[in-house]
Amino acid sequence: MQIGILQCGQAPETLKDGLGDYPDMFMRLLAGRGLEFENYHVENMQFPGSVHDAEGWLLTGSRHGAYEPHDWIPPLEDFIRNAYAASVPLVGICFGHQIIAQALGGKVEKYARGWSVGAQDYDFAGETLTLNAWHQDQVTQRPDGAEIAGQNEFCENAALIYPGRAYTVQAHPEFKDDFVEGLIETRAKGVVPDALLDTARSRMGGKRDSDRIADRIEAFFRAAVSDRQGAAVLEDR
Image (cartoon, rainbow, N blue to C red; front, side, top):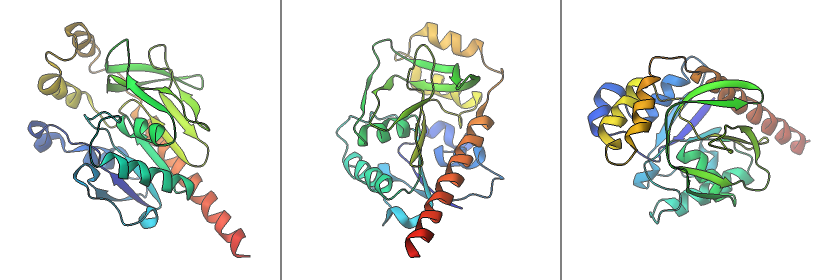
């Protein structure tokens, strides 16, 4: 299955050599699952020619806000709406989660209670999963058709499912602890409260359930592509 990665941001330059950039992290997260990847750096205005250039699309995180006035955000929102209308499945992580919601009519804003950094526990339909997070923005209003798939007390819309069309997660299953530590050193000082950084460091080395999210991403892509192919066969009859 061919998955197009829509790269919406970049890892800090000082971390790329050792830990890779965002597409590298997703390819490691989803390795061994029969998925093939092609990267499009949409933050640099590199867009696919069509929503049909891949069987599914994965939108990465970014240090930018979905609501910020960058030239690449309106065409990205158009791409999301076109893919959604064509039932080409979308997966979004952090910024990807937010921009999909915004493009489809939801609301994204800086959360009044501040940052979520490092290991966080989420309720996924009764199953507690621990994932690394790094965000201040949140989806504060869901679009029509979006259903909650994961949440906690701090983040109501921590994961959303748009049946057959999109699956999005606010946390970062692709972030390992060493990358979170790198972000603390390169992006957090003077921005994220020290107490939150201390708490994040105190939970490093613990259990992370990134593979469980990878399972969900793969299952979503395969089910959505299968449903779309089945619908196309029926239309041809």
